[in-house]
Image (cartoon, rainbow, N blue to C red; front, top):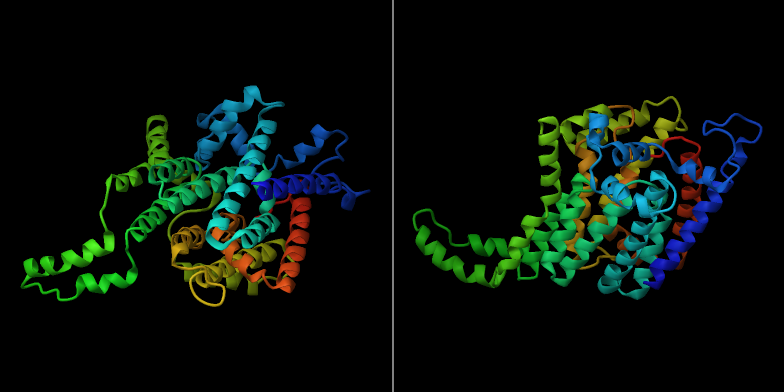
Length: 409
């Protein structure tokens, strides 16, 4: 808990200081972000950017104000609306406070989960490496990112402990925060079975001796390995039904309000996100955009390079979580499954514009197990110094880009 709190407090101080000096590069020039702030209130308004505006609209006016807002899931703006009357400032300030507190919860949870799975020293690095990632400042912005990460980690942590109903409850809240939350159900199912003896290698044992001419005999023969594999399934298996409740409730709201339960999917078209595309096709398309760019320093080219690199590196880290010199063990597989889905979702549902994988390096924050692998690599002091130095420097630059009202994604 102390490690998470110290990292959080240090991050808040760093974000404030970087924001305070973010106008120095524009000295003597017109700034896209407007005039230099002269008060603390004006300074923090520099964080009122991009998706934040949509969350504030929903918190203040609901979804009826603009149906495009249904692309943004409800739990975060609902929380902002509920707590706004008792928090200082207006809706935006409430959003920042909630984001910052959720960030604290996320850092404590990732440290606790990593401590149990890879040890205290590696857990400390996991926490620092997560906060050092170039887009980690979104965890304290008025976005739903930190709330989703905290809820997902709470669910994954309780899965680890075998507290299935708690795990499913947190997953249900996560599915009301972002659609990816419902994918915690896949991790839930795998980990539940693993703790009861399931392993992929047991599948051939079930199938062995199968004959379509002797189904009854096969069923008798497979009964023992099934018992050995699954153990005794108890009522906790039904907890998985709670996982999609947040999404289901949102679908019901969309149906009652707009007459379309999938309104939130239709709203994605306003951001040029629609339809499934094979991940390898998307990777090829992004590579073509990079190679066809007039300059590697063009903002769109940089976004494409960064997001494609992030996706590929994250997938590589997930493989390394299971095999190789930094592998974490079979008990981490459920974390790998969830993280793989998080990365494959934007890879298979790209934005149909000149930067198809936009925000992928923000979604990487949700892949806790990848940062555990990096923490293992960080046992090498040279890797540790290179990672922290480069990542913190990049994040400082990205904060300046963000508060100057330019898109970081």
